[in-house]
Image (tube, rainbow, N blue to C red):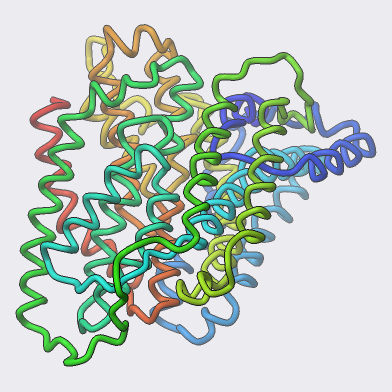
Length: 484
């Protein structure tokens, strides 16, 4: 099962270096039995193997609230402890080969590509400083969010989030209540905005690789996207206007006014375009040149894409003036937090994804059988909610693939006869990633950047209170209109 998933998720979020891959090939040569262990049957696993993943999620949710100082200093060690809580028993029960194959797959096909793409986008976006001091108001903030929504489908939710979160916070730095600004930013820019093209969010890119037309989602979930964007902007305006009238705005804005609006480090916009181009190239370039690393397929397009992303990161660091990074208060702390937490998530999630891939023969059979109607046809409403709920807590890219394949896996059929089902899968994976901090990678990164800038963000459950109260009614309404 891991080998199949590796083939399906190889293009998931982008890149890692050829040097790392070469080292992995040497490791494979030293351990020739790993490849055979990659085809592991998820139906053999019980739900007990999901405990470390659940434990890590609960740690992320509760420890910053219960023991904030301890969490702040030791979250990396806690992530590592839960990872070992999975790998050591798994190695003992199923052997070094199975554990090694899973580790290689999670690192090479998922985590390292994921973290290098985020690093590239974080670095490039951090090299662009929007000069001038916008004075935050409900109308202006709505405008910034709308710009982010438009950009997200063209430069990815991560790129748009990293470009605009700092200007949004800076524009409102003389306001007392700012957490709600970041919460709605995560809803709109980090998630909903990426719903219209394969460049916007990893699940849609995987659909593109499986044969879904580039503009299919723009045509078939455009009404749902407009509904979400308009509804959230209206709700945001009401909420922000309430706080704007309630709070006492500081008499002096901490950010001095600049002579005019503009961009410093504007050359990084070209690098953002290059990142998008590399991701798109890796999806459309077809070649048989590939390497099998312990059951994980590494293709030449991925190597080129990964090398390009690393070069772009270095070029951005080289051409960006120190003053730009200082103006942006650029630091590596948010990136390090995401890297340490997500390595635990990507590794402890291994058995959960494998069990999902086992389909009706695995422990999640009740979930998978509940999405089919009595006559055997797929139920779009159930696909929407099943894909969405799992995407809120698991990685939304492989979750999308699980339900894409459960619905038949034929892109031509799904785009036509079963279009409502594919729309439900796409909407669930993208929209409901906003339900938790870990539902989509930019969520946690935006939270980390905001906290680094002094914004007191809601806890894990505090954020879910916001998302549950605001997003759930919208999803229910959407279900009755489009997915019934």
